[in-house]
Length: 196
Image 1 (tube, rainbow, N blue to C red):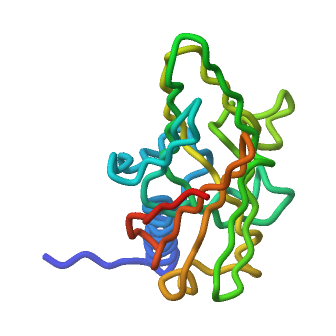
Image 2: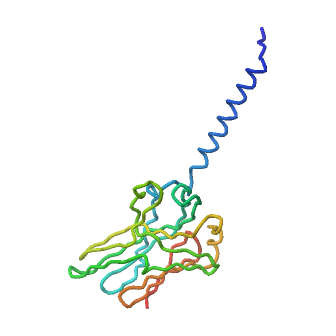
Image 3: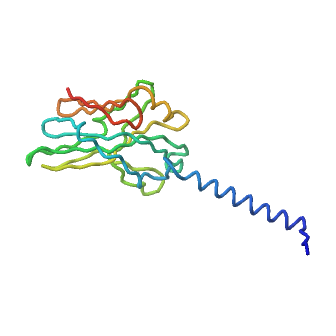
């Protein structure tokens, strides 16, 4: 025996199905390089062959990966970020060092701009409206610390990860009268390094 379906039942059923499809699409968009906060980001390990020696300390950085932030914590616009593991070791029991984000600069030959904004992530501000990144890294005597370094490339309307797959990227660290340059030939490549 066949059952008749009324117009009202048909509309209710199709409306519920459409809502379920829309909800699943929103959840599918939450994966990959997009996450509301960078708490769960895992950076690739640093390559011990790329370390640079400043005398009192050594510094090293891994390959870059990408993260897109949430507009909730960026004043209404999402930002593209690069991030990488950044390791600093002091050489003896009498040496300690503090590195600030202002000691580091990022450049890309393709014209992409970026600013080093974090040497680690603290969390959200007290109002839960903005990200709070650590702006300095202090390493005590005969110690080693590894943090995630964050580079803000700007809003997604003004930046693109795609452009970083070509051209060279450099991260420059100036400290203790010396300059180290980590050079990447493309996004997600391990850097080469030199100091002068």
